[in-house]
Image 1 (cartoon, rainbow, N blue to C red):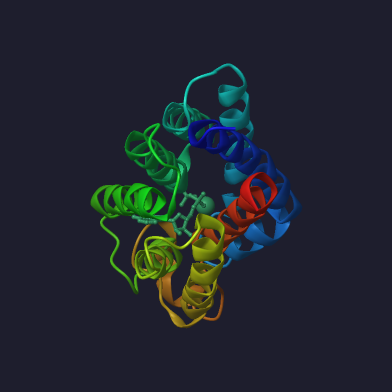
Image 2: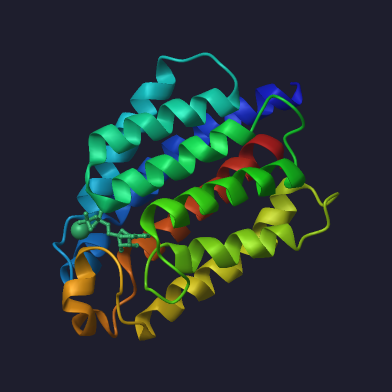
Length: 213
Ligand code: ADP
Ligand code: MG
């Protein structure tokens, strides 16, 4: 398989695994969101990922195009703050992920573009108790990997930064989104969006291990 075919296989497998892992944690994510939000985060993510999977079934383009389609379908189907933000994250990353080398440098650039878009749209800064608190440490850790490090190894090395970032949201008071209104009530509970983002990143680790390990 050429590098662009591997990228297509990884994106497809990732979306399928993401749906599995988020479905398995749907209740947990709902409970976390109920602490200070409206309790719908698990359901929102499942709906978005179902639509994203359906969208890529209909497309036979490159990996970047698949992610753009997946992001649009995710936003349309899931609604809510996280739906728009995660949809934009996927689509922005897709616009960078061309059919060139599918490697650590390209994945880093794609995720940096996704993170910038999320922060521009949602205006959340690190420490505001959002998915940015898991995504930004991950992207920074990925960018710190040697550019010639194989993507699977680099991804694995960066994952603990996302997990630590999501865990740290327990001690934060929400400043963005619905839960900002009841900010203090969110103290002691991890942010649902940061938690689900870690599941998405873990699903990608599995997809990479299966397709290019
Ligand atoms: P809603 O808030 O519309 O009910 P969800 O419950 O699906 O949407 O998602 C809530 C999650 O979305 C939060 O836990 C947080 O991580 C993320 N989020 C909300 N607003 C923002 C924002 N402005 N910037 C970044 N992430 C945000
Ligand atoms: Mg919610």
